[in-house]
Length: 610
Image (cartoon, rainbow, N blue to C red; front, top):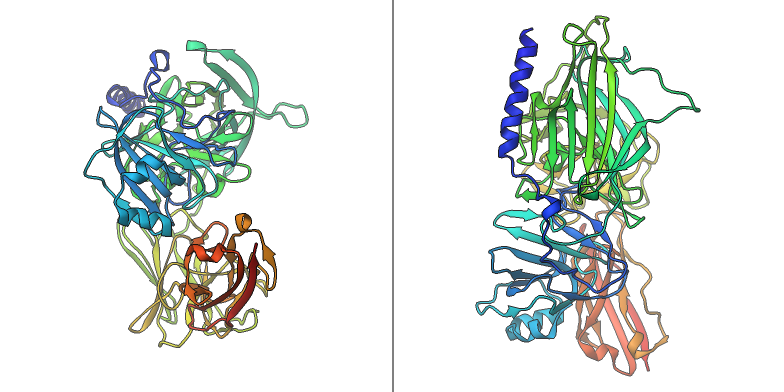
C-alpha cells in the first residue's frame, strides 16, 4: 500500500514539473519565417538536432546538397556576426545575427559570397586564400537580407559534402524544424525494437536475469491531430505465430531502437520519446532545444553499443535514467524504471511512443503480466569503481595504472587490469617493449576520458598502442591519439608514459623502428596535365606512430608551397602559390617525418601542365 502511495505522489510530481517544462512549439499554429537554405530539389534533411554522435549530441540540422556545390542563402535577414575557418571543425562558417536576438550558423562551406569577402580585412582575405584557420568578429555589422546569397556549400572541415546549420538563442541551440523551417514529412518514426533490462539482482524477464529484445512491426496507420500520422506497432510474429506473454518481475528498464525515415532514404533521430505506465508518463525525452552540456553526455540518453549514424543508422534510447546526473530535456518519475510487483498489480500496461519534429507519432502498447514467482537474487560482481569519486587501479606488477576521473562512470563498475604475457605478431619494424595489459570490462560509454599510465623508463621511439579485446596472433592494433604531441599520442612524463582514452581495451608499449613512406600521389612522374583539371594530392603512410604532418615540407620549382590536410580523405593537397598550375615543366620535392622521428625517403616528381 505504501509503495502505491509513493508512486501516486511521484506521478503527481511528474505532472507538476511537466507543466513547467519548456515544451516544443505547437505544430498547429506554426509560423515559418525561415527559407530553405538552398534552392535544391528534392529538399532533404540528413541529420536533426540532438542525434547520437560518438563525442556529443549533434548540434544542428544537416541538409543534403545532392553532392554538389550549391548556392547558400540567408534563411532569415540580419547582420553578419562572425566568419571562421576551422580545418578540423566546420571548415568555413558564417554566423548571422537576427533582430530578435537569435542567430544562425552555417558550416562546411566551400567559400563565402563576394559581398562578405569584400567586407573582410585584407589579412582575413589572405587567410581564406591560404586556407589558414581564423575566427573573425566584424566590428561593422554588414546587413544581410533574407534570401541573399551568403556562401557556396562544400565539404570543408570534418565530414562529407553537406550543409550544417545551427539556430541559437543565448546558450541554447533550437531545432529549426520546430522553430520556423517548413519541412514536408508525412511519415511517423519506425520503431525497430524494445529491449527490457533487469536492473536489480531479484529482477527477472521471463524468469531469467538477462536482457530481452523484442522486435516490432507496424500493424496499423491512422490520422491524428492536425493531420499528423500515427503508426501503431506490435510484437513481430515468429514464423507466423504469436509470441508467448512476456512476464516481468522486479525493477526493469526499457530501451527503444528507433529512427525517423525521411525522403525515403535519410534515417533521422526522433525529437521525443516517452514511456508511460497505466496512462501516467514516467519518462520523457524531448529535443527541440539543446543547451550546452559536457562532451560524452549523449551516453546518458543513447545506448552507444547499439546506436550508429552511418550505414544502417539506428538510434537506441534509454527510456530510464542511468545516472544521478540530469539533463534538462529529460524528465522522469523514479528514474523511469518499471516496478513489477505482484502485490500491486497482475499486469503492467506499458505505452512507448516516439515522435518526429512534425508531430508524427509511433506507439507500442503492451500489457506485461507480473511474475508471481519469487526469485533468489543473482550474485553480481563486487563493484570497486563509483561515479561520484576518482577511481585509481594498478596492475599487480605496478607497471600500469589506470585513472578514472570523478563522474567518468555512469554506473558502478568492477574494473580489472589483467597482465597478458605474450609476444604478438607485429608488422616489420615494430617491436613490442612491454607485456599486454587488458582493462576490463569492455566499455565505451564513459562520460570522461580516462588515463592509462605505463611506469617504465623513457626509451626512444616508444609509445602506447591499443589493440582489441582479442588474443589472436595478429590482433587489431591502432595508434592512440594521432593529434597529441611526441612521440605519438603518448606523453612521457618523468617516469611514465601516459595517454587518454574513451573506451577500455588492451594496451602495450611498442617501439617504432620503421621509416614512413609515400602513398600514391595524384600526379605521376613525367606525365602531362590540363591546367584547369590539375589538383595535386599527396598521401603519407606509416605503420607505426603515424605521420607527423607538422614536418611535411613541399616545394615546387624550389618555392615552398601551402598545404591543406583533408582528414576525411587522408590526403594533403598542394594548392598554392598559383605558379604550380602554370603551363610548362615543374618539379615537386617533398619530405616529412613520422612521430618517432624517422624521415621518409625524399619525394621528387616532374610534371607538365598544358
